[in-house]
Structure formats: structure tokens, C-alpha cells
Image (cartoon, rainbow, N blue to C red; front, side):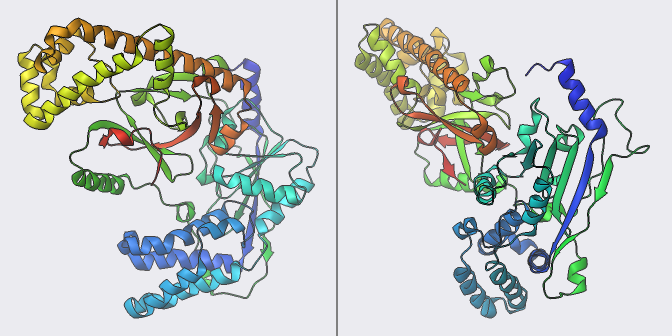
Length: 521
């Protein structure tokens, strides 16, 4: 972890002890009607809201709602056009009249408000942000957003109106550093953010800008021993006058129906649903070569990747010292908020081309060594296909391999990601079983050179990555959750670091061809 001096701790402690939180509630009648009507519509659907049909209908509406509650983007924001197609939604609405007549009216009310909003270039959250900024121009201010994907359009917006010069747009993870600011402007409900944003703040002033129909009053809980006790002397809070955009009056019952912070957030990943779909795919492709893999959700919440649970991979941990940020760790040890490195151009395993070059420079016959590797693996795969995994397991045990009784080990030995069994007696058992026992030394030597070259390649790539990380401005990585690193000396291609957002609790049997390949959830 990053070393923290006593003065750093004192600075953060002082901020926590004297932080002033100012609430800026905002009203906009049409948007409020839209948000509350959407919540009521989901309540009408009940469990049916999880059906594919209703998911397709609700997803663009929920995403629009969240992005406009979590950023100062205008209601007619161009980013909404990527997922909002009002014409398609209107077509779905017309079909509702016949198939779901009881839902037609509430659904049409939602789309009616969406139509009005999509023609509006305003957002009162931007008005509040602008007024706060203008009264604090000479100070060190940051604008805190819930999602990193909102940063580019927000930066573009505020730069167009000359409100970006002294403002940095960040996400919560950037408030774990040692840097303190004069003011943090938080957009949305504080309940959307990690607790440390308010309990261990990197500022003495926090302005919370939010729509008043979303519960946002934070109950302070000091995190430092000796901090101000909230029951004796609460954190200094202030509620500014509500900013209103006057629109036609709407039903008082709807106005009174406040939303919980979770009502506005995008749905969390349904790992059980994903697991079920993966299982269905597995049943269709039962002949594929598989290994056990862990599933990682990447920054943006729509992309994911499978990694071999027994393998190692490169990660960047920004909480470490610069010299230790690039590490090659076990996939099983990866945690959320780490950045995993994946080859995103150049194709294939990033270790193999470098390892081949090392072998060639050592005077070895790369093609022969690779062919010997494929020979024993190919025979083992063929035996499994003909006899079945259980029979091969029993035969390998008879040949002296105790761990072959675990069929997962045989799967790993067949994998292209595995070079050789760890113990020589297991390798000997395989070679004897597949009829190559008279050439053991030849295969041992080939496996040795492959293993040595792959280890050297890993060290070399780590060195190159470390150089790139040390020389790079990692602001983009912290802000946006991804960053590309060009490794020209590693036989071309590039690697991209992605922030790990979540990790599936289950282990999946996945085709080797799908490992380390990014896909959309």
C-alpha cells in the first residue's frame, strides 16, 4: 500500500473533523414525473419486470433516468441517442394496447414525458454547478460523478461553457489518494458512493447537488477515533433554497412519492442469470476443450472477461508504490478496483511471441519445441476423446500419477495454457500412457525450455509495462477505468488496463478459445 506520512493523516483527519456539507436540492417537474412514473410502472410489472420483453423496454428508460440524475448533462443530451430510440419505444407502446391494455396508459405517460424532456436543452443540476463554480473560481475544485463513462461528455459540456479551467472531473476511487481539495461537488445521492467519500473526505467542503425527490440526506458516521461525535456535535450541514424549473403542475401524490437512491441506479449484474446462459451455451458446445475460469466484470458494466483460475495475469494496483504497481499475480487473488491487463491488439497470448523470440535468440529450434509440446498434448486429448476422461484418469493413476485421479488436473494438462505438469512423475505417467515413454528426455528438455522462456517473457513484459506505467499520466486510468499501453518491444500489439468492477461468485467451465477475450454482457 502507499505509505502515508503523519502529516498526510493529519490533513485527512482535519478535513473529516471540520467538513461542511451543503445540500442543493433541485426541482424539475417533468423529469420528476418521469422518474416517479417509471418507478410506479416497475411496481405494476412486479416480477414480470425481469422478463426479457420488459427488460428491453425498461433498460433505455432506466439508463436515461440514471444519467440525467447522476450528471449535469442536458435532457436532450446526444449521448442518450446511443440507447434511446423514441420511435421504437412508441412502436412497443402501440403493441401494449392490445397485449397489455392495463399497462398502456401508465406506459404512454412515461413516453409522453420523455418526449417533452428530449426537446429540452437544460438541466438544473448544471445551473447549480455553475453557480457554485463561479463563486469559487480561484479554489481547487473537483466534480464527483458516480460513473466514469459520464466523464467525457461532462468534460466536453463544461468546457464549452468555460467552466472546466480549474475543475477536475473525477470518480470516487480517486478520493482514496493523499490529495486534498478545497471543495468537492457531488452530483446525485451520497448513498451511491463509497462511505469513505464522506467519512474520510479529502476536502473540508462538500456540496451535494441532487434532485429533491431522491433521498439524499446523509447521516454522518465519523470514521476516525476522536472525531466529532455526530450525536454531540453534528457535521456542519446546510440546505440551500431549492432551485426550481417551473413546469405545469402535476399530481401531488406523485410529487410526494420519493425515490430511494437504489431506485435510480442501474440494475446490478444478475450473476445467476448469466451463469444460466453460460450453462446453456455449454450444453450446446459439449465437445469443446474447457478449463475452469473466473468471470470478471470490467469498467462500464457491460464488458466482461473470463480468466483461467489457475493462471497468473498482470495487474496494476494504484494503491501500491510506483515501483510495485505492476504485478503478475494469481487470477484467484484479483480483487475489485484492481486493473487487469489484457492484450487488445496484436492477437493471441501476449507471452507467446516474446517467449518464441527468447528461444530463437538462445539458438533453440522454436518450431521443433512447439511441435513436441503439441505432440504429447494431442495424444492425451485424443485418448480422452476416445476413452473418456474417467478412464484416462484411472490409467494415469496406474502409471504412477496420484493427482490424475482429480480429472481437473488432466483438463489443465491438455490446456494450451499449461506447459507441463509440475512434477516429473506426472509428466512421465502421461508420456508412458500415450506411447511416448521411450522419448521422455526429449520431451522433458522441450518443456524445460518452454517453461524457462515463458518465465523470462513474463519478466520482460512486466519490465516494459512498469516503464510505461512509470512514464504515463495515469489520470485517464483513474478517471475512465481503462487505458491502453503500447508495447512495441513486445512484438507489437498493445495491452489495455481495465478496472475490475465485480467478480462472479461461481467458477465456470469455459472453452479455452474464450479465455482473455473481452465480450459484452
